[in-house]
Length: 337
Ligand SMILES: NC(=O)c1ccc[n+]([C@@H]2O[C@H](COP(=O)([O-])OP(=O)(O)OC[C@H]3O[C@@H](n4cnc5c(N)ncnc54)[C@H](OP(=O)(O)O)[C@@H]3O)[C@@H](O)[C@H]2O)c1
Image 1 (cartoon, rainbow, N blue to C red):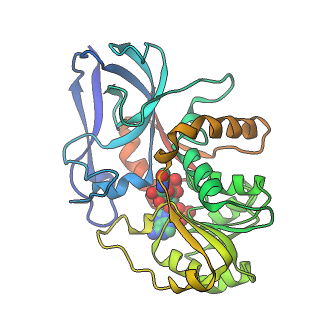
Image 2 (image 1 turned 90 degrees about the horizontal axis):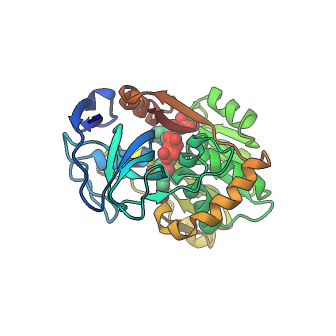
């Protein structure tokens, strides 16, 4: 019987989390019951959004607070090693929400899907452009943002798992793209490697509003918001008439329970603008459509997934902390097998 290695939430982060909030533990795998299958995990997905459910009492309509001393919830990609479920055969590649662990026992719930493997597609793409990050970028930008050729788009966390894909799809749709990031070095990478037309360092001493005024003299048509808080409030002062704000995430707020207020709501009225939230999981029945189009873009060399890959489950906690503090680039993953 194989031993499972799991990363558990050992203590609740007070403010910014660190690797010390987690602990690696080992346990015996349980015997499968009818309706269950065993996944040998190949990659763990590190997702910024899960940070908010590590807080005490965190609860919304989507997920509730992760319990202490239990494995940290996560999206994983793995192969079925053993099955007592008629719809999930041994050998199938699957993706779903289980935990930071080397093996998972699943029953087909929690976003579990069988992946239709295509020749030549590297496995990690199923957690990047062709996985939750890519689905979030695709439906958030195209369904909520509704880009038109020539639109001016601002993206926050522009080089992250979601943001890197948003910027590239916006370029494919003929938009002018401006990415925000936390250093000059990352901004240069956004322009040189991710094809953004321009980049703004929100941590530069220069006033962010002046930088946005310079980049968007006629206002921005779409703001794809991954961070919320002060950056969102500032961007709201630079909307063009009929602008769309895609409320994807609020990473600047996940370290606290009390979210910062937004002061420039009035701009939505005078600019006849729309701010709309969404969850990628709402679109599960349309993933095939997105995967088909994104696969064509990847094959045509128009889209690629930058990734930062940590090696082995023991690196998971540090890699997650590094991602939240902006040390990584692109989609963050842990390679297990
Ligand atoms: N709605 C949905 O269905 C859905 C699904 C998936 C993800 N999301 C959201 O999408 C966002 C991105 O998630 P991800 O997993 O792809 O993470 P990510 O962008 O790969 O990593 C997070 C990045 O956010 C930036 N950041 C961190 N703290 C910040 C702060 N205080 N202010 C501004 N930027 C900060 C850093 O990039 P820089 O160094 O470049 O600033 C960091 O690398 C998150 O808000 C997440 O909740 C939403």
